[in-house]
Amino acid sequence: MSEENIITQLSQKAQEVAKAPKYRGAIFQIEADEKGLALVDVKEASLKVYLMIDPDCDKILETRFFTYGGPIFTALADTFCKMIQQKTIDEACAITATSIEETLRDTADVRAIPENAVEIGQLQTLIEKIKEVYPEKKGTAILVREKMERIKYRTQSAEGRAEADAEWRALTKIQRIEKIEEWLRQTVRGTLQGDGGDLEILELTDDDHLKIRYQGACAGCGSAMGGTLFYIEDELKNNVYYNLTVEPEDPLDNLPPNPDLPGLDDNNPPASLF
Image 1 (tube, helix red, strand yellow):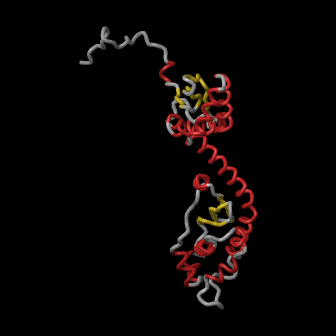
Image 2 (cartoon, rainbow, N blue to C red):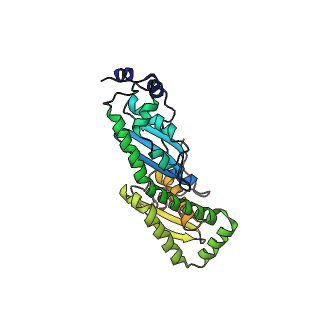
Image 3 (cartoon, rainbow, N blue to C red):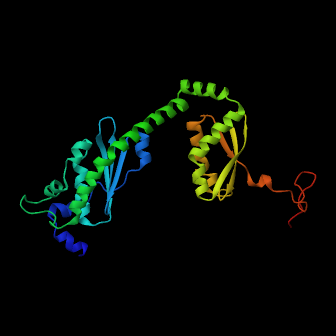
C-alpha cells in the first residue's frame, strides 16, 4: 500500500502529526556524557527512539526519534516523545502504544490508526525495551559523570593541577612513559591497528613533551596529523597528565640526504632557474 493510501486511513490528528513531527532527530552519546546524563537509544523494526535522562531522579529531559517506516510510525513516535517529556522512566513506560493511538483519535469511538497496523505492537515492544535497558544505562552515566568530574578537577582547578604536578614529578622517566603507553593501549592503539596503523613512542623530553611515530596506514594520513592527533593529546591530558603535548615525527626527518642535491645556504646558492 502506498504512503498516500496509508495516510487517508489515519485520523486527521494523526495525519497532521505525521506531516509535521516536532521530535524527529537524534541524540548522541557525547552530548549525554558532557551533560552527565544517561542516554537510552532503543530500536524496534524501523523506529529508533532516543531519551536523555537525569540519572539522579530518572526524569526524561529530552526525546527524539527517527524512522523510515512511514506515517504511522512517525505519528506514534512523535506523540510518544511528546507525552513522556519531564516524566520519569516508570511513568513513561507505563504509557501503552494503545493509549497513544487513542490520543490521536479525532473522536473517541473512531480509531486513529487501523487496528491491523503492526506498528502499534512494535511500539509497545520498544517501550518495554526502554524499561529493560535503562538500569544499565543509568549506571554507566553515573560512572561517566564521576570520571568527567575527576578530569575537570585534575585539569582545570589549581588544587587538582598541583596534585597532578606532584604525582608526575614523583615518577621516573621510565614510569612516565609506561603510564603513557598503558593509556595508549587502552584507548587508541586498538583503533589504529584495526585500520592498519599504529604508533610508537620515540621520546619524552622536558618532562611533558611526547614525540611519537605513526606506523602503517597512519603514516602520512591526513587524519593522523589532525583529528586523531588532537584526540590522542586530549586523552593523555585528561587521563595521564594535563600538561602533556604530543608531536608526531616529521616523515622527512628519516629521508637520507641526496648527494646530487647540494644543500642550500649562503655559500652554496641554488642554480638559477632562468
